[in-house]
Amino acid sequence: MDMVRRSGQQGVPQILVGNDIVVGFDRPRLEGLLRRYEGTSASDNASPGVSLGVSVADAAKHAPHIGSGAYVGSVKPNTPAGRGNIRPGDVIVALDGQTVTTADDVIRIGRSLQTGRAVPIVVIRDDKPLQLALPT
Image (tube, rainbow, N blue to C red; front, side, top):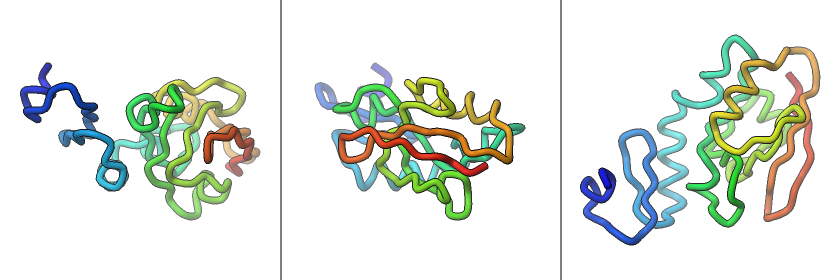
């Protein structure tokens, strides 16, 4: 109800990113906000584990056709995600053999990772599952 009061919109999807509200499915604005709020991302909150180098948000809000997972808003170059071929728009559904249902799962799992090994990751890209490995 607070978002309806803040945005003045009712009956349309509303996504809260930081302190900003995105009304409807404005993907360019959403991706821009995810990049802007990168400071609160899995890349920075993964300490003391591995810094993955991605900004993520709940896929249920950003890619509702997929459902659960972590929507990738941006990828930093020369990070495990960058070297592992993760792309903005991917939805992470598994990391290191664990199911990912929200962005918080990526942060939690990232904190438990150790450096020096390839970490398996499953993403949805172009509506198809894709298995990759993140070099840590």
